[in-house]
Image (cartoon, rainbow, N blue to C red; front, side):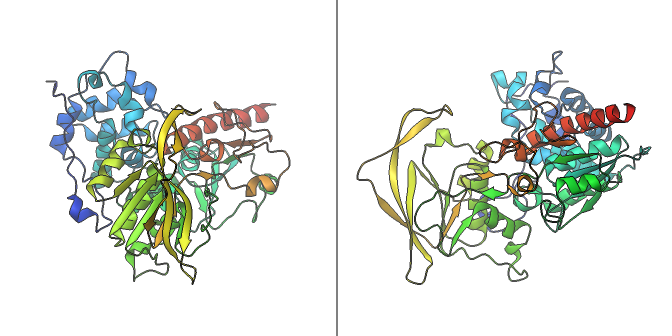
Length: 466
């Protein structure tokens, strides 16, 4: 019998006053009974509108009906047909602007909790079943994948299932890309990321770490090593700064460095780590996206008393997920909206002691459709701080481009690639994810990886037959 409740089944969470002092996962997940109850809210619409919002084409109504019937293993298998990282996507995908946005139930209440149920089936499977070993007939063809983030992992997994010998080249000492270094433990436990990666190595995918392509190998040298095609999924790891005075002071971090030291290098385990992060009592995070929320919530957990989100627009224009903003507020993050930094103030010995800001008001919409922030005359003021984290965006690292002449890139650094195939200007080289679009979502990067895998297979097959 269908569950016609207008609201989603609430997911249990840690108490805000407890979780803002630890790095354990905030959301605790559905029980089996909760999952069945929520799945029964799905109307199994004939047109399957939710699916058009999924970049990797998960057969959403089918897996939900399996959950509703208590068949969790088959539900997991159904998700895995098109999504190789369900435990991850169920946690970090912005479902509210993708699959759930098109859910019919959302017209008169809350949409079905697709993301929570995807997470549930993945977690249930990991807890109750051993990973299945796929029988794959190798075709003897070699493909290189640069970067082990969501785009690279997805492309590698799909190609491995087709029989290709896939080698991933990862610049860091651990695989996972932004899943490992960018997203905090309290949103995405690293143990889950490692299990998903183990599923790929079980398909025969090789992962070589500490391999900075552009330094260790160029694209041409990889081709000379026998790789018939290359997928570039190296992400957007080059931080942007504001260009204001004081950004070179001690105590100023890019969000990239701040989160990498906390997540990948385990600074939150201090003193049992080699890379502690000093935050002091007062921290400002400049920016309003998910990365800014992650940095602010991490700073709070590291012991900061006052953590500010400094953003030049209003709350309505915040680009972060509503869930992340909600969690940040619950945890005591202070939002200083309609504020824009103009300089960072330092002590005589070179450490941060404050940030000068001006108040803003919103004018007419700009090219992004958001109302343009306009300075308020005479509104300058100073926030006392010990730490500033700049979280205003990232761009692709230019290193790969610098080692080849025939790979076309945009002026801002992104690789020019066909949206449907990932094909670049360099024969045999495909690209996708943040390396092409700039910083975006995990699921969009995965979708690009899937498209590129299909195109690479067609490219190699065509060259072989000819």
